[in-house]
Length: 347
Image (cartoon, rainbow, N blue to C red; front, side):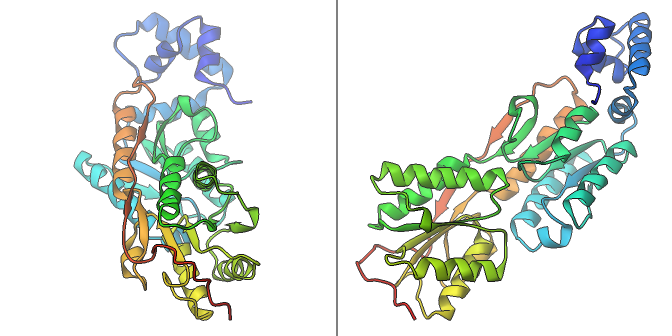
């Protein structure tokens, strides 16, 4: 089991904040106390945490970025370059550069992260996702290095800095938007259910359906990672139902593009035959045919604020952990129309 600052503080009979100040060699702590705390740290094997914390003193002027998937896969989705652009903009102002994980698998990405910390390659880390069964965030919590998460942490969210949208409310708003246009049979296509954002948006969709006095039909709900074949299969399953949905809420513009292509293959017109509301308001939403009504989650601002939070921690280690919620707004385009009782033409 990893040794924490609290463990060291308890054995040394000092406050955790004192341990933290000793690690950053604060002049406010007496040499006698520093010696005592450092002796306890050595006895308890707290070397990794000490090494990570001394990055505050021996700055690399670099922050690490932990990608959601492999770099090549992540950069396919316009959300991530936009987030990185926001991070980069703030880092540039502060004279910091960025180091990205380059692993192809989850395990590779975790190993990359450990190397960043243990090799003292970065002053702090931004994790671009939040998901169940993740090894990265628990490791960072015990390592002592400053870090921030984009997305609501799935556990102990009060102990770390994070930046997010209110994804439950955003999905509720998107579904309400469809309901107010007369749709009662509303499908939901989400991403990988392991990620917190997918679950949050699904919960928002369900809340809106319940609040609209409509029945939640589990056959209308599909979740899958970005994949052309899975998208086509999901659409076929929805359209082959006895009562197919007249509108679909899709939680990512990239998946929405797959859905548009799958519908086109079946000669189903959007929005004449079926309406779509998407998420993220990336460049895809404005360039697709038709242009997608999409929820703008302000991805640049998510990145910018996450970098601000991280550098605040790096420069002021005792700063209070906080969360920042970025507003999301619906950008109306041409993919959703008032329902006119016409059923999709199934071919």
